[in-house]
Length: 453
Image: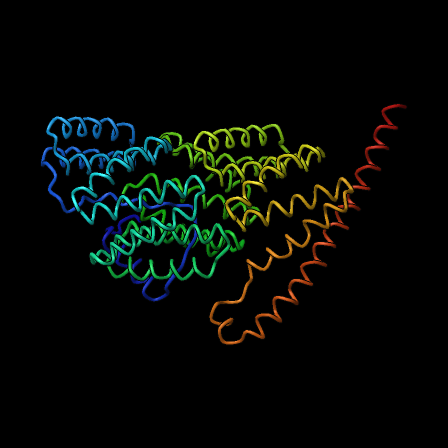
């Protein structure tokens, strides 16, 4: 970025997207904060704008300023100003992980905008409420609110604003393993953001696209888009998005087995998110750090990270993050040979993931549960989870929607062959695990014998 004016850099990014459209995925939830059509008291709007300057760098200060604006709007009994401030405070509380307070303010704003007939304000609140439902795992309700918001914004000619809801819908589809829909949605977001030179949406899209590549273990491609997003986030001083970028760069290095680099970026993300009071972000970074410590055999530090991550997720009532933390605990206990303990954590994680229909996360949980039951020699249970795991393996390499339309026979044939291959692949995994377990038991017996001598 040195010596390159930000406007020129952004123009180059827009050119990049026009030349090669991208699509995306990740749990970055965009919340629009623009004002509604109804006139807000100038002094109140001025205070909101002042708070907005601190939104990403000092959310607590932003909340203090906006609370004062809310009190002023109440004294004036000015409904448009009350609606504006309630919604903005909701955004700030969402960013700090206080979902109950955020929902209260979004609901208050929504009621006021409905009474005022302010369609722009209504659409914005619908998106915000959808985000809350998304965070607590009520995905059907979330999609319903997002769709209402997108439709109304498009009706109003606000295509840029509509992309916020589109990003959130795409993210939910990615959680549920409906990757083709997610890809299509994010592809449209990239196009629309490029046409309007919307830097914030481009940042979101880059982060989401990089997450697709991270999930596929394609670290080079992930890093390419994360570096773009990081430069844009730093240029506009968006520390909240910077935290996402730093964390996800760590994931890319983690996938590439570059442990030192991964630790470096996870720790940077953790420090920044701690300064911002980003509890949800800290939960994610702690889970990633725990996996790194586990990889290096430092199980004490690993379990500390996982427990703190789980605590934060429970504090937020973020069910998906809770399921992820439970899976991490199960993986760690498997490594330590506590298979009954692992089974308990994994079973609870599976229960939550099934409730939310999180196919991507279920695939990982099923894989770990298969390993657990294999180690316990509970083969009846292994037979229960093998087909479930095999079925979800198809999600990652399913044929495109276009190929399904053009050749239904090829699609069915492909799925059948892959299902058989997946089953034998899983069987080989179990055989390997059983063999490893036998060697482990033999080693422990020999070790005990030496100690007895």
